[in-house]
Image 1: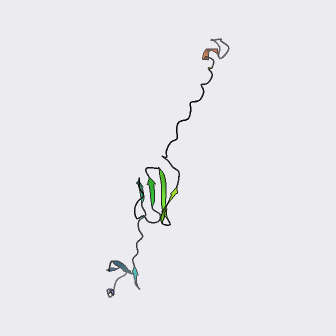
Image 2: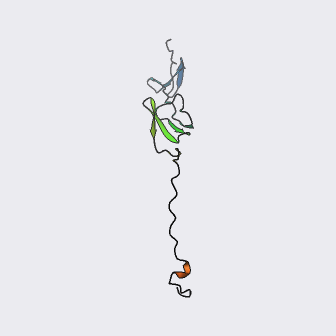
Image 3: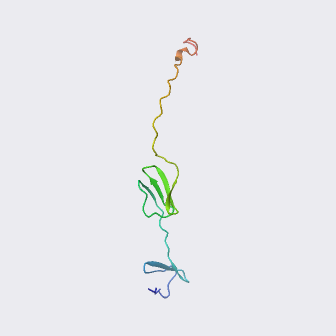
Length: 110
């Protein structure tokens, strides 16, 4: 369908035809383009229909991702990843001297 733009438009005037918007700049009608919003999501599953630059925090693994070149790319540090088993207890230390015997047993000296 041919667009029948308004006669004598004023600068900044908008016109929409077939779902596309146009704006008059004083000389020509320019197509209005919109950039999809970049979002950041925290979820246990990746968001559907992301745009390049969108972010996702995987609440299950604790890992950050950014959507780039048609896929999710991991970045950052794993903040809440699985914790390994506790290691064995260390050996007991040797018993020290009681406080009163620091100077060889003279309780009145410092």
